[in-house]
Image 1 (tube, rainbow, N blue to C red):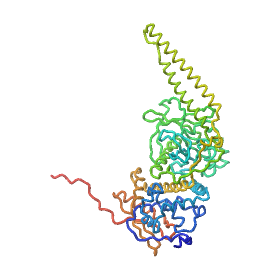
Image 2: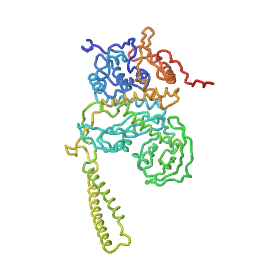
Image 3: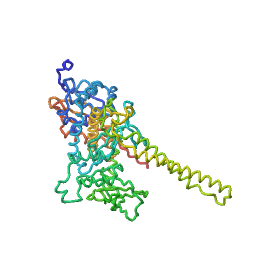
Image 4: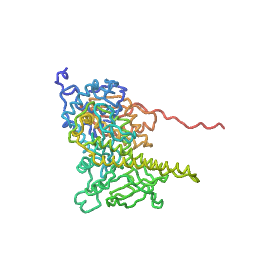
Length: 567
């Protein structure tokens, strides 16, 4: 009743003695969630009117739901609210309508979610050893199938189609950990986003950059290295980045012929995951079209295929340059994992917002002409191949020769007509501006941008959940023999049931985990409990320190040896 009257600023958090709370394993991630900043900066960034649920409860609830693979807010409708309430220290978790309403209040005025995520990214950059000196940048298209606005089409590599959507440019550390994201409702291209948004932010926030005196003393020293795919290939951009003392590492877009096998030498290198592999590497100096000399590194696979890479990082060794380039797959794996397990591409709210009229977009008339040019060029290439393949038959008589000459003349006339059409289309395309401002488009062709505030807030919490899960994976790998099973084991722990044993007298909250199917996994789980308890984490809103332990005695060891043969 006090909450309904607006006189209760958050109900008290109290825990009860309960057994077998489903999905209670998410409490194992609470120390990591707090360490990654789930409740950091929230007090000075967000505020809510007085009500039943404290401010921290909404962030904890969203973080727990993300780790439990509840992929959308609507999915909460099918979850037991009372069981989730036991994990929050309340009688129930907020319902979907309340959660949506509070998300809207948290994001008002606009831009608060972006401010919070920017502060967190600064903390992640400052505290990440893997982010020192290297940043991975790649674009990810969030496909939009709705009808609220006609977003521009863009190529989606994973589906090999041109679909409507929004492009997000992600910046990750070398191990794939996300650092921050730049959303582009009107995609200007990777190079433009790098110049205008990403490089200035990295220059301001990325740790470990050399001082001005060190840069002046060593002409080959760089502030940091950008690792991107072929979309960043541009000799002009390489020269611009080098002038700003920023190194670039990417694939060669035009590698040319293969190098001689004798140039490659086997080297043992240590990958970012700790695995030691043998690679056949070679290196040359390469001069680009603008006269810039860069390093060209190649890796030769067992099949003979050669992967060519370009680098303006002149101080990094050959081995480390190859490892840094191949570590880009950690970012691709991040996109795939976040899409499958955290539903990163899902909309959080429906609605559009107007774009500034000064935004430059691709001219639809130019795009139509460009499509016609491409089509006519493809047809011309096909007809030229047919013209070249049409030869006079061997030992042909006069009628056959005349028939061949007529076909050849007909194809030649078609080629000349096609070339003339192609030249006219190219002239029209050249005279048509490629980009126009949004206000210059007809009203029927104008579009808006999808609402981003709520999604940005929820996505930031999902990133925190992913980073927390990864922290648990690192702890599990300390005792797990097979590293590839670590993340699956952590997911199993997060989805398991727990028993809660609050002890107000000793100010502890014991989380008792159920044992797993094998003794080896129980040993790993015991190690995880010890490490989590050593953090001495206090549950937010209480004075109860979290203690983690296993339930019951371990199962008896069975002797799997075969009995001796008689006699």
